[in-house]
Image (cartoon, rainbow, N blue to C red):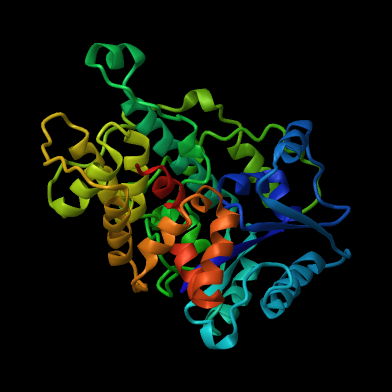
Length: 392
């Protein structure tokens, strides 16, 4: 199932203003719906400032009636309402016939396991529904930080560039933009939502993360929530979350972040060498981003460590831009369950000026291939459009 848009439904009584972490997990097309009551903890100035600075993610606030479990019931019923809207609040126009291959995803952010029966109910009916607790979100965000630290550590210094006559135009903030979609932060799956993904707390624990991607223990997570007020309202887990959050980011030990598993050349050299010929061996950020997208976190980082070593050799090819696009897209299609329509390279060449803007390319792609197929191609190539646009 290809996920088009994610709807994050936030139980603010339960998670306080920790939901602001979703800014680092959501894509530009996703939306965050915050459910609140008078009992919801107040936001600190720092949280308000961050909220005001957000200009990418669509956020809506839904005021809920008060009562025993009242917010919970309203959140779940609203989720069902969104499922039936088929486009009223999103751009997803998939009909029932295409629901198996194209759908939105609904993610409840709460520490309350009481939501899990509703999650299973809708999952059994074929909908993409999950619940994330605060600790899991912290782990996902920290994983993105680890990626940034590793890649930035590998970028040559200006002095090294001068000594080696290397001209690298790298953007060290690019890695923190919207480079990695949510599934990659979880399991390295870049193409689809699968029924094998665990639910609720099963997904939201460190023990269930892939062994190669395990982060620090929850108590060591470098998040500071001293701005989170404790006023006695909401779920009792709020105090536990605040206690966990007293650690400073200064406590992060990043001395071995750039270390990955043992280097192995057990990978498709034609594919990897094609990426090198398309993007250039010195384009470290884009190479790392692409390898992790295509091969998953563990193998992607292993390949990256292999090819950035000076001892790695490959045969440089002089490829035209169109040939680079053909090689690049062919590999992406090969690693997905979506077939190449046959003229996708020509489409990208015709619309190469639109690949710089996601809204522009989405409009063009749905116009050319129809809503259902177009959204499949858009979702698959969404992480790569800017890379394709930069090919020369």
